[in-house]
Length: 425
Image (cartoon, rainbow, N blue to C red):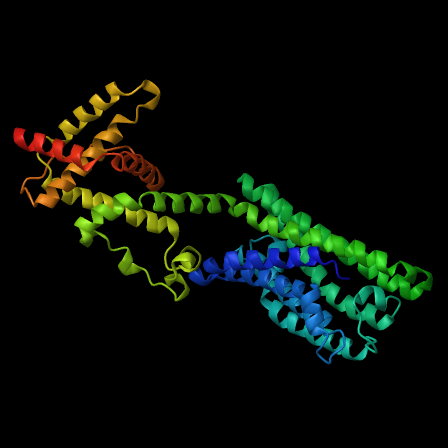
C-alpha cells in the first residue's frame, strides 16, 4: 500500500533519528549506542522501499516484489539490533540475575546467527513459495489467500514478534522500577510501541491464514492492509518518541551549552587575543572535512562534546583573567565598584543591571587597556571576588552577564577608569 505523505513521514523520521544518534555512536562506540543507532538505520531502510519514489525505482529491477524482500531484510537486521540493544543495557550478568534478563542476554548472543537463518528462510520462501507471476503494489492485499505468501510472512513475523515480546516485557518492567520520570515515560512509550507491533503482527498473521481457510475473507484484504499499515506507522512514531524522551534533558542541556558557548564568544575572543597560550581547546579538536565548513560545523564536528568545549572556554577565560591581573592597578576593582555604584544611581530601578557584573566588566575593559599600554606589574592586583558556582553552566551564565555589560562599556570609559586608578596607585 502506498500512502504517500505518511510513508515519507515515517521514513524521514527514522532517518532523522538515526542521523541524530550517529555522532554519539561513532564518537563513543559502545555496543548499546551502536545497536540503537543501527536499529533506527535498519527501520529507516525498511521504510524507504514503501515510499512511491523508491518503490517506482525498484520496480525497474527485474526481480518481482524485490522491494518487499529488501524491506524484510532491513527489518530483520533492525530486530537483531534492538535485541542486542536491550541486552547491552544490562551489562555483565551473573547467575543471580532474573531469569528474563538471562534469557534476553542469551538471545542477544545468538541474535546475529538467528537473523542470518531467518534471512535465508525468507529468501527461500520468497523464491519458492510466493507467487511472483506479476508485480504488486500491495503485497498483503494482492497475495491474500495464498498459502505461500502466508508462510513467507509468518517466517518474518515470528522473528519480528520475538523482538516485540522481549523488548516490550523488559521495557515495561524497567518503567515500573525507574526513578527518573523522563526515563519512566520513555520506557512506557517504548513498551506501548511493542504492544502496537504485536497487534500488527497478530492481525496480519490471523488474517493471512484465515483468508487461506475461508476464501470469503479475501474481499477485506485492502481494508486490513490499510488498518495494519496505520498501526505500523503509529508504532514507528511511538518507538521514535519513546527512545527520544529519556534524552530530552540531554538535548536541552546541549542546546543550553551551545547557546552559552556562542554568547561568550566576544569576551573569550578579546581575552584570548591577549593571552593565546591559555586557549588550548583548538589543539585538542580534530575536525572532519565537513566540520571545516562553517555552516556545517555544529552538525559534523564530533571531536569534542559541547559541554566539554564550554568547560574549556570557561577555564580559558578564568586563566586569562589571572594573567590580566598583572596589567591592572592594585585598586582597579575598587574603582570599578565605585563606577558600578554611580551607574546604578543614575538609572531607573527597573533598568539597573547587576552592579557586580558591571564592576567586573569595566575592570576587564580597563585591564585590557592596560595590556595595550604594556604596563606589566610584577605584583598582580587582587583577584575578582569568588562566586559559589556549582557547575560549569552556572559559571558560564555569570560570565554571560559580565559580557553583556562588557560590550556596553565604551573604550573611553575604560581608559578613564584605568587612568584614575593608575594615578592613585
